[in-house]
Length: 229
Image 1 (tube, rainbow, N blue to C red):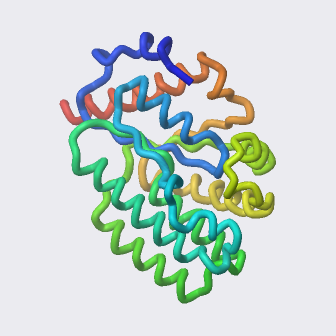
Image 2: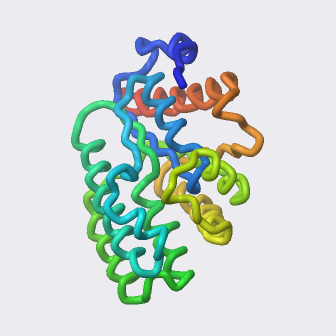
């Protein structure tokens, strides 16, 4: 998928120089990677994706969540901390596929509730995050892509990643409930924009894509003017 027309609508000369950091949040299969690519390509920002390729735990995790949940979550936490440090330590704007906050607010609690992570591992995991969080600055903007768990499951089946072929619907439902709870609290961390992908077609509707990019540019401009003034 290319975004040539959108690039013409948002020329780089109109993008503020002030660094801006956007994270795209949402359930498995909701479409985060495509939106991350679109934002990065149109604005010319660095793009950071979820560490799925060459992940040493992912295949084992989907075969036996109880055995591998703690290992996988610590791996994701470590990699996302590394990515966020790269974003914050280097000048320039960036867009990230999924935040470190989703690991501790969504995935680990859901796995803990499902009995896939025991109390000892869960508390250890949360302590690791608390120590990491002291060294991090939240994004300037979180874009939460919302969809029904049934829709997420259909999209997962359509993209056809082998390791995801057996994800149960009730797991996605648990993640969705955790997201809906967290997104009410997330504005205490940073500004949040919610997009219902059931009604807004960000994959095929150029108008919807332009609206999203326009909103990001406005938020970026507000930060630039606030720092300049």
